[in-house]
Structures are given as structure tokens and as C-alpha cells.
Length: 134
Image (cartoon, rainbow, N blue to C red):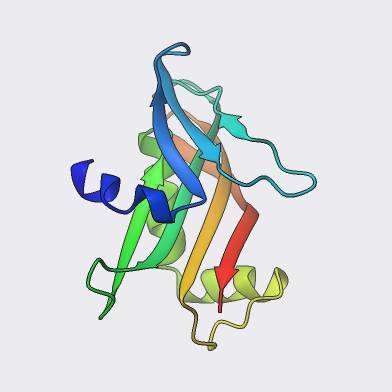
């Protein structure tokens, strides 16, 4: 997506096409302990497997507002992230469980989700990493 490409340099978690693997992967620009530099999904739409998705709230290019970016390594990943971010009780609970105050003002927030799915529907998803810039 060319619009997301304008903000990619500001993201830690980036969904990108890997020409060697011939699929979308999630690259982690600065892995922390327990994280890996590249998250590779095993799912191929609509086959079962693991996918990854990102939810990023970043300043816009003019720094006078924010952009919400929802990306996934496949369609199911993107759909799960979209459903997650619009389910306020679930989003609030997940943020709190990671020590993030949902009411706090942030400069930037990035969430990385892991999704297990079967037959084009998610069965389980969880936040596996995050970045917050206060």
C-alpha cells in the first residue's frame, strides 16, 4: 500500500512481501528479548494455520493528527485485527493486560497479533508484542 509506505519508516512492526518466501511476513525492526526479527505465517488463504497482523496508531505526516494502520500477512489476519480494534472491551482488556493504560495519551502505539485460523475464520488471536511511545 503506497500510503502505508509513507509511514513505514516510523513503524517497528511492518508487513512486507518477502520475495524469497513469496508471501507477506511481519518484520520486527528492533526485536526485544523473546521476539524474533521476522514473523512468518504458515497459513495460505483459506487453508488453516498461523497469520500475523499489526495495529498501528502513528502521527500523520503533518503531525497534527493520527493514522490508524491495520495490516495482516493474509486476509484473515487483517480481518482479525480490524475486528479486534473495533471491539472496545476486548481492546481495552488486552492493553491493560500488557500494562498499557487505554486512557493515556500516547504519541505512537503498535500491536503485533498472532492469529490461529481455520477455513478463512479466526479461531484464536492474541497480542504477542507491542511498542508504545508516550
